[in-house]
Amino acid sequence: MYECLWLQGALQSQDKPSRVGLVFDTLVRQDEDIPVVCARKIRPGPLSRRAKLIIRHFAEKMVVVVAEDGHTVKNVMGPDAMVDEYLRRVEQHKDDPAPQDVIFGKDANNVE
Image (cartoon, rainbow, N blue to C red; front, top):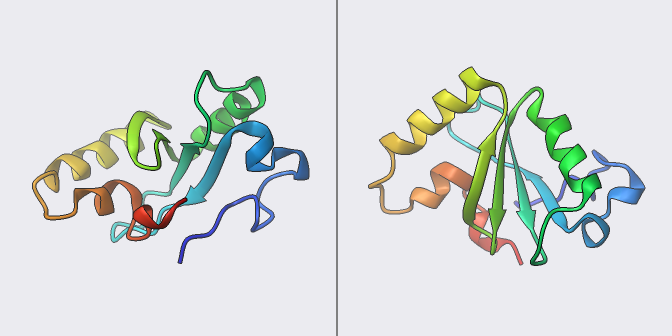
């Protein structure tokens, strides 16, 4: 089941998606030893200063996938070793029938 981190209380009240322009959610993956947060842009244009601060905060300790249009990856960041391993696993599964599951988790297509 898809759950927004703001709705779960993981972000401050001022970080409502409509204010920062991003929806943050966790990714449920088979290789759960790599914590991953997806930051999905919900409006066009550059990221707000607050959005960048939140992304950097998460990226200190986990992989952050920044996406547009619900699933188009624009950037992957985080601790180097974690990002390298995450990207290696994504590359391993690029020819799978549903590679977005590897990148975004099973509920990626349910994001509106």
